[in-house]
Image (tube, rainbow, N blue to C red; front, top):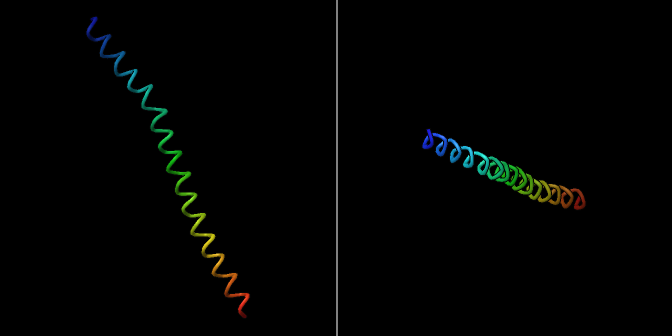
Length: 55
């Protein structure tokens, strides 16, 4: 019984540690992708503005 409780506590500790870590990774990926698409959007807008000003 004692060994089973130790395994249960260890797996619970792993779950408690991993949940915030995985959430932070996911939020970081979402933020990073947002920044990448923001940069792509800015470059596209800059090209459009240059084309309009030349006409």
